[in-house]
Image 1 (cartoon, rainbow, N blue to C red):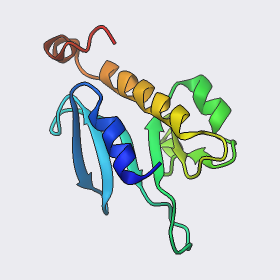
Image 2 (image 1 turned 90 degrees about the vertical axis):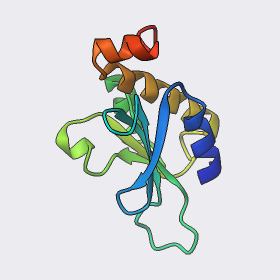
Image 3 (image 1 turned 90 degrees about the horizontal axis):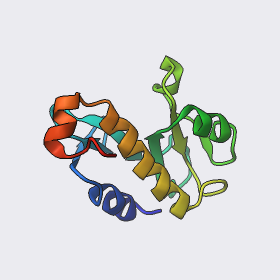
Image 4 (image 1 turned 135 degrees about the vertical axis):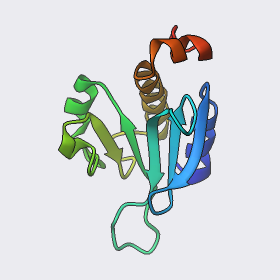
Length: 129
């Protein structure tokens, strides 16, 4: 998945907001930039290759985390997973195809939306996700 494809997928989700921060990472939040919840982070892995692949970090369920944490091309998300959060970083499409990544991003968006206040969920029409 290219950076543009990643951004297009995230932009297609309801009430998704984009900001470039944290050293050039493309961060997507649901519910607004100020009070929204992060659901995806796209950037480049810290590898030494000339053309590093896009690394995409997403929130996931406990079950998905257990399945993907040791899968080829995936790892527990740096910083987030070390703090007990269930976030995965996909660094290649070896185990997670672009189509599967799209579904994981949608699921991450829904999980992050659940972290908004009930009032904010209702205001945005996200309470049905």
